[in-house]
Image (cartoon, rainbow, N blue to C red; front, side, top):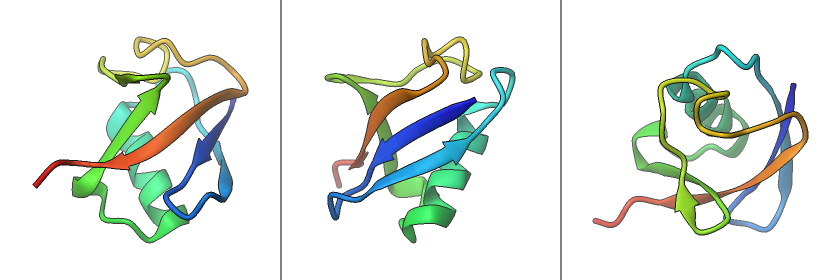
Amino acid sequence: MQIYVMALDGLEHNISVQPQDSLDTLKQKVADATNVSKDQIVLRLGREALEGNTVSESGLKDESHIKLTLKQQ
């Protein structure tokens, strides 16, 4: 499935994941695409931070659009 991630610089990145992939795997792929540390990444669907163990548990579907934000320091 394809997930579209709006990065901090305004660019949208297309990330390929499987529904059973962990959110940690998704964060690592986003980190690789954006050069942002995985530990600083918060992924949001609308205003809500993604939660759950897997991509499918977090409510993401094929072609979902999410936003990358950073953890508060």
